Length: 414
Image (tube, rainbow, N blue to C red; front, side):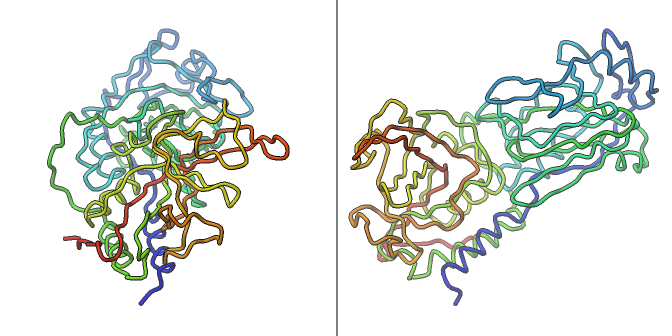
């Protein structure tokens, strides 16, 4: 029988096995590749000349990028041109191309493949010679925004590779090679990815790389709609691993919480109830949640405030703000407000990690790395022998409620 830590490692590996993007080329009618701009006029992007694209580039404004909810212009970080929506028109109709269905089927998993998606055009960008965009992550514009879609027009260029990175993995999409190699002259390239994935555009060495960027949103369902869907390839394997873990009698015999770090970022703000993220989980986070439900475990999204021994650890329903608090050396638990619960960190077998722990608090065991991609930070003034500035770090995570062994019933996946 595999040990509890070995099963947990297998679960983590299973959750990180699928690339967080999809890409390819798509044939489109030539009449969909026409662009109109007041300064550049009419341009057929399926048969454009260097002069046409120079005019388009000259019509652009310098492209900015988001930092702390503000637009920043810095050519050492991003050098490209942009046209905002009012400044151009395009015959490209994404709804008639079938591209939204391709993205839904390729990027989303399981029941998320059936969810309705709103696609919102964001900007047109022109990357001329020596243009680039260094590594960055997109700024979510609402809680329901889950990803981005970049459409690349068939304009001649070299370089400008699109690079994506996550968890030490790197993927390179080279449209300069993909599009000319396509038998269909009238085609576009596309890459769609979750909004928290780091990505960059390498330097364009020749020509013009012309793109449309779209933001992707889940449309909230007014009521639950039953859907029929097949599990994603690793979902069955994940279910088997979790079933093996949960039915092991050595796992938290007295019951407690099981913690899973989020592998995607979600927009959060101070005082927000993080359970609002529950219906917006994406990718492998959503798959994990579905499997936990299928196995019969209650779960929710919580903030885990871990303090490595100096103060107790807490699970919280909200993003805490300690900015106005002066905290005594006894700890900050009384200042966290409603929804905070003290927990004792434990190994999977239920043994407390430190000797100095609260034997009344429920135990929390980490199944996967709890250093989440979605986290919060707050500072406060702590008073002991001398005042000091302390920091409160919270990781937003999925937490499953595991009953005690005698009350535990785990379902098998179909």
